Image (cartoon, rainbow, N blue to C red; front, side, top):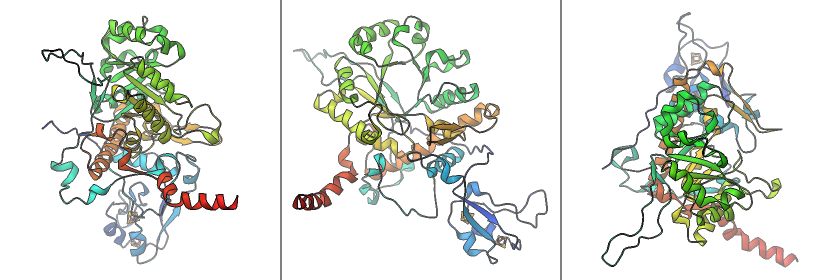
Length: 469
Ligand code: SF4
Ligand code: SF4
């Protein structure tokens, strides 16, 4: 049995003043009895260090999981939880405030987040929130632990695959098997923005190397000290600058090229030119416009090996008016179905990025039809950044970010991926799927709210509407 892929996490605090959903505060009427230190299993309450040890220190909201036990058990009613004023302002309609708290916690300790206050809904929403994965396998008595004996592979293969094999009359294989690259998690990093400090850039690249995945990085921005990580870097090269970057192409395993009409019309020659320099795989990046499925299909028919569909940071289609822009779930499904219709789906690898904000979005994107995902903003949120969607997209970085060590940032990104990997294993284990590659396009293993809503109530309301007319 192959060795299990394991992500080594390490508690890595940033010591920032995070925003929390609830702040826990100790009132003046506290008698320092210490009962709260015993009831809180997350050690949010401790006696004061350094000062008077008979007195309680301020509660550590960072580790609090909102179970309310200390509040109920305090004999003096001295503890209070209140909604943090900044909490509701972070994010926006897509990047919800709760997501930041979840991502910060995951980056801190690499664990699957736990909350004691339960979830009171809503149970559906737009995009990925309107689909649920089939967890029926979770009740199987043979389920003996995804971290134990059960082997679940989260690796995926990138590259062009054959639709079928051809043999000659003597049974000799005639088909040329294409080269592919395996990565152990269905996630690569897409560089979130170019103007990041050097320590952040280095940390993202080193985290990709530590996780054995890759990061897409503008070819002109690869500093000399990052060259030793070229196996984990996918340089984004303008299609007219292939010659200029020959030395770089010789040292990497994959390159990325932005799609345009000229790229499509010269694709086989362009791929050949790159392959003559080095036998690398080429990723074509296509913006998710309303014609994306047609473009992806044309690229695939022209021999593209890997196509990266890029939606905006909220997982929305580019270009059309906001009201009818498709969301990630529908964009991926449309691309997948078009390739199935054109009988070329199995030959090409599809990466999806844009709006991949939570661990659950990875398996959901794959169920909709992506082979793997690329993430960008979560890498910055892991290092404490805050995003505000309205009135325009603004990213606010922690003060003195450039002074945070590369190791700290790297560990936080590795932690984040550790937490996401554990959740991917949980989802796959519960679905009874043992190989991540089998998630691709498995829409029968998910429930889509629109479809069940339409099946259950659609006919009823449609009839009424018709009767009114
Ligand atoms: S249980 Fe209440 S009174 Fe006792 S130390 Fe904690 S906050 Fe103070
Ligand atoms: S609410 Fe629960 S988790 Fe939070 S401090 Fe109190 S006992 Fe600990």
